[in-house]
Length: 177
Image (cartoon, rainbow, N blue to C red; front, top):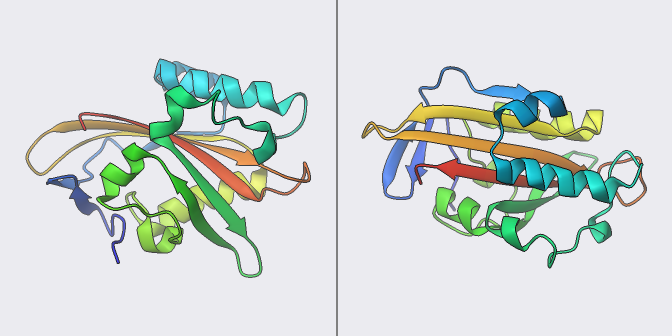
């Protein structure tokens, strides 16, 4: 079964990707995210914010796929399991499938992640779950064939009880794909 980027490289469509970035950047601050994110990512965040309705985070049932149509290609839904903590992809949008080269829905994050390292990817998901906050992660890097790539991913917590994160919605934009 396919795997994600392991220690800095992975198959990215038909090109090998090497992460040689000016250090991937991350923030949990909406103001910083707004200064660096694409308009599409900002609109996705605003949609999530509107669904919070004064709560810490919305529930999955608050999210309407019809309303999310413009963002669906970049969406993932990731189930959160505890004891032990695991993350499993429930839904994978077209962009995320293209990045990996296979449909990773049903696979664990450990099996099918895409990122600099498994440790960094797990740190991102754990931060969102533990702190019950959004996370915006962005990077620019060059492929082995010297293509400049830009990727941004927003991690958004969802909760059925309003307190514990049981799902993470991610939205990814890739330029240079």
